[in-house]
Structure formats: C-alpha cells, structure tokens
Image (tube, rainbow, N blue to C red; front, side, top):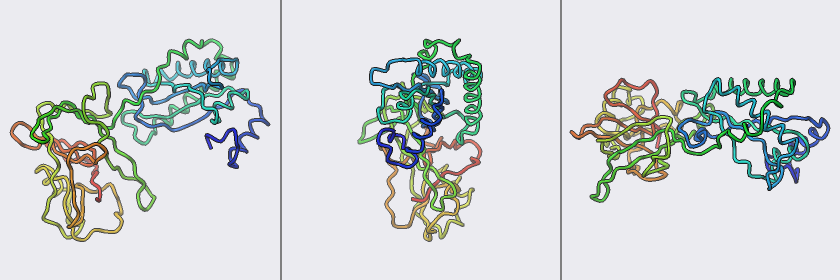
Length: 334
C-alpha cells in the first residue's frame, strides 16, 4: 500500500486518497515502525525516533508545505532531546514517486514521518510508545499554536541521518583459528524474531552478519574478547530421552563444558514455549555444524588462556560462564 499512491489499486489506498482530498488537512502524521539496528548518525546511539519531511520531487525542493513539516519536526526534536538526547535521527530524503508520504506532501498536506526504532533495554518498545506520544503531542501543540514558525529549517538539517551501524551483539578482538592460521576478529550477531508455530509469540534465531574489522560498528551488547579464543560449540552426543530430561541444571553444566547443543531421542512436533530451552536441541541423526560463518547461527564458546570456557554464545545470546544462571533461556530446536 505504501507504494500505491499513484495507481491506487488497493481499497485502502483508494480510501486514503479520497479521505485526504475530502479533508484537505494542513498536516499529516505518517507513523511507522523501523529496524532497531539504525544509529543516529555515525554514533553508537540507536535512532530511537526518526523523522522525515518527505521530498515531493526528485530535486528535493522546499516549498511552503514541506517547510512547515521541517519546522515542526525541528520543534518535535527539540522536545525529544530532553528525554533521549542524541537518539533522534532523520531518514534520507531521496524522493520516492510512488510513496504516499511523498505524494501527500505534493498534494498540499505537510507530512511528518515518525519512525520508531530501538532503545537499550526496551525490546518490546514500551518506552518508545511513550516517546511517540510525547512527540505527537508536542507536534500537535506546535501546530495549534503555530509555534513551529519559531524553528528554522537549519535546525531540521542538523538532525543526523540514520545509519545502519548497530548489531544486537558485537564481540571484539576475539582470536579465531582456521586452516592453521590465527586471526583477530570482530563478530557482529543479530537475533532475528521468528513467529512461533502457534502464532502466540515469537522466538529468536541468531545469525552472524559481520566478521572482520567492526571498529565503525556498535552493539546493543558488546564484549571485549581480547585474550579469548573462539571455538565452535560442541554437540553432546549422548542423547536424552525427551525434553523433560533437559533440566536447567544439566544445561548449565554442559554449557560450562563447551556444549551448546544436545541430542534428544523423542522431539515434540511443536515446542509449547520456543524460548525455554537451556541448550539447543536436535535429533539423534541430524548433522550440526557450529563453525563460525557468515549468515549461520551463532553457537560457540570463548576460551581463556588456560583453555577453559569463559563465555558461551548460545543462539546469539552471551552467557557469562562464571556468573549466575541466566533468567531467560534462548536455545532452539534445530
């Protein structure tokens, strides 16, 4: 629908166009959800809220309609800086001729795009919902009092642009041996949300998305692994009968021994709770490979100079093997 502003082939697109033409609103808010992996400019801070006054042509000209949106966004940014300093960004304003935002701007309504990104400690975006309310309320006040006129376009221009520079977990300076050659690597891992089979929730499935020099990237969670060596997580080959035998205590014990996966004789067709496993589980005959590789799952152990497991990465989540048992488990069924 968001790219159907010209052809109007979907019923929702046709309805939205008719409504805009009937009301002819001076302002419009275009509300979206965005990836949590964007940063505010080239900083380590997540772009928690992002704005855009969309361009109505390829030249990105600024007329009265677009200028009103820019000034209002500058005022909304001014308010949000009191709550999330340095965590507001704006999107690149390259013109998209099919998009509703760009076209509604062209049709005479000042469009304010608001995107909800990410924030430390707020995976469900509950606090970001409050920030949305704050931003929109401040925008409505600026419009009602025409207070947006006191903010300049230059203040809008100073809002940093979104950059995709964040990962869920970054491991820095870890030693890795492959084909007899030692290298020092940084590793970027993301935890992808997968819809649960019963559609009543989701579980995480990790992926290694960057290997090498990550000095220009950042993580919501980071570990300086200097002095530690990465080895693939092991598979515990002595199978247990069922998941009922995989206790939290057994999982913690095996994890501290360098195991990240164990075999189970009788696996259920569907896990009742896909986030409850202290280890990854697999069948008795499946082939499992936890070698470090791009686009593969993150299951490995970081060993210290005495060849003892110090940290484990289980399905992309970092476990301190000298700390307490984690409150949540993140193993998955392979």
